[in-house]
Image 1 (cartoon, rainbow over the protein chains, first blue to last red):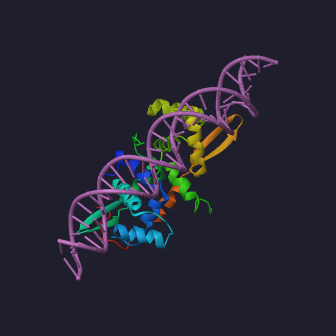
Image 2: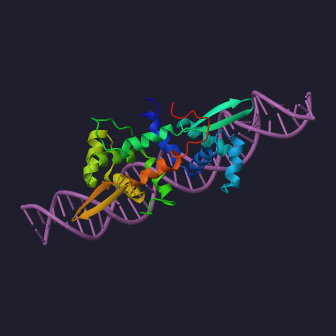
Image 3: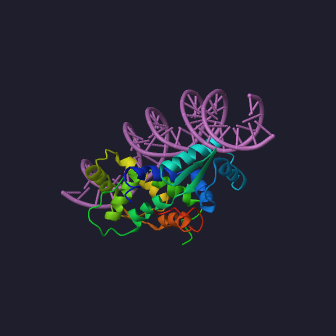
Length: 107
Length: 107
DNA sequence: ACAATAGGCAAGCATTCACTTGCCTATCAA
DNA sequence: TTGATAGGCAAGTGAATGCTTGCCTATTGT
């Protein structure tokens, strides 16, 4: 799709810049569909991250804005799923030799 | 090489977080072996980035710390080359495991 | 030698960012 | 209902970051 291009690029890289957010992605890759509290307890238990619930919530919002996390609501629960699709533009930007025409880069 | 692991991960993602640094990577991907002044003029000409030489120098230092840029000195010139090797750990970290989940990735 | 070129080092400033604190809404169980 | 759970919103704070300014060293050309 043409999504995850242009303007979203900045959100994507900024989302990946924080180590806590990368750990959250690791947790969602290991078990998808986790709630906010489940992620919080996992960060505390497995990674010894003393972090508040609101901080994790803000991290999830950043990841969602970058398209790396998708959410679905069910009752009072909100489940979070990992979406690795935006990551492919990283590989497409520099890892592939530039064979195409004058491709406009997205800062 | 065993480099580009562990501690370097944070430097890598932080280096990619800035749009100016990503543009520098684009320029080095298009033409390798550029000097500081050459990169400066390209950022100014092609990308309309009014940025000082020192700022570009600092960006290059960050990129070099992340392993994304390698340098070689010849006389009073310092040439910069792109190294995309560190980028592969991004794909290897999240793109590989896709056995679980609701199976809604890659629409 | 002298000046121009290519680059480096360090302090200061302004913005951004991660995190906390406090309070609020919505859903479910007793 | 009441209370507990799951989550959201907004202001404030301290640290990190991007950029500038000023001065410095090294190399090259005349």
